[in-house]
Length: 110
Image (cartoon, rainbow, N blue to C red; front, side):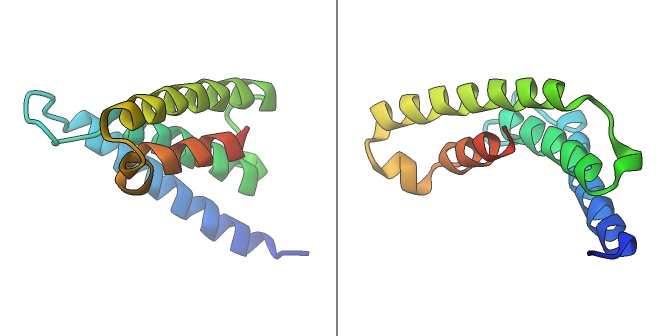
């Protein structure tokens, strides 16, 4: 069995990731191209919060079914983005785009 203090450290790391993503969203300048990738930062924010709750039960924020719904929506969103990128750039979009890995990550969280 894993000691609680190790899980707490990893939960803290997840919350740092969530905080950085939240800060990026707050500081975003949408009028500057490439300043922020909103869907990615939202995904990182939500995944950081959810994973912290999985690692340390005291940090649980939503019921499991709610998290499943959140990550199902993100999975559908990133699937749409992958298809759109694929149509625009072909298979290259799967290799260099940011949406394919997020599709896999979101689906894994479901």
